[in-house]
Image (cartoon, rainbow, N blue to C red; front, top):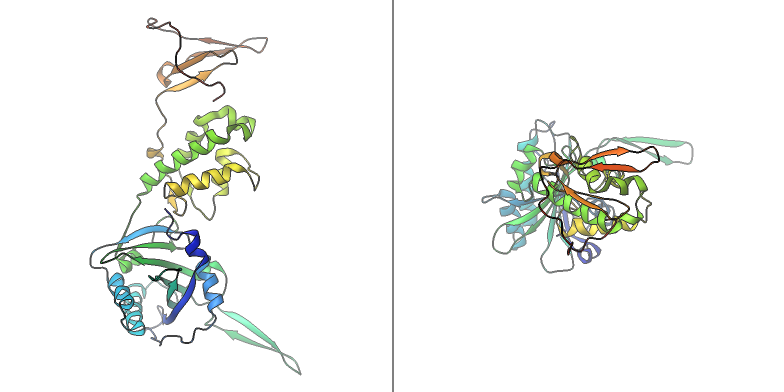
Length: 344
């Protein structure tokens, strides 16, 4: 299930915003008041919209972030609550983090209950120019918010549960497939879906998409069957990243046109299993091939076997194949009452 529904994404807006300056060059964070009225909401809303996928976490009991946001949601002081968060963030990350801004947004999603966004935005040096009457003027800015995705180093979208707890969707550019240790400590949250479980769910989604659209796939992909999918997913070092899925899709299904139907089917299958927005290393140990394999000839002969008893295949001079089965004895030779479809 997605962290935000499509309707909530369409309704996304900024209700309140604030930022504080943090970084390794500061002994203490620079704490600022709430920005009211809102300034440049379209710019910041676009930055948040660009990061609406991530890994799902849940608050642990005693999370300071949960307590602070719950206090704000209950009518507490927005500025004081976010300043406390900024101090904690700065203390935990001061030795390793670059200078930047710690932003907190209260977001509307079309319901009474808000969603909160906590963002670490790195400062970036830019040179601004202005065209004067006499000559152009250049000015270097060291403290600026820029559009490039790399500047938004960390973002946590928080949806509080009634009473206690809540879910957090995290995108951490320093560790795409999980979360940096210090950011996890700041949030005091645990990952909801283990990478191993996600790998298993990915396998099931890929198989459904393949079987649904097999006739539309390249001939070599069809010939490889489900076995090819397992071989690809069992390779070490593979990862699923919703922002960079194309290399994995190509390895699984061959080069796909932009509008290929299999893309939509796979997306739905991944969403139904809660995988679509997660990033994770694919665990080969969770990609286990089924013991039984099936071989079917053009004549409709079907052979079920496991790897230990694979039939011997020999190519004949005329191009046909001889299939040989060495057995200790035949246990059944009867009418087949099962519905076996050809070309599966």
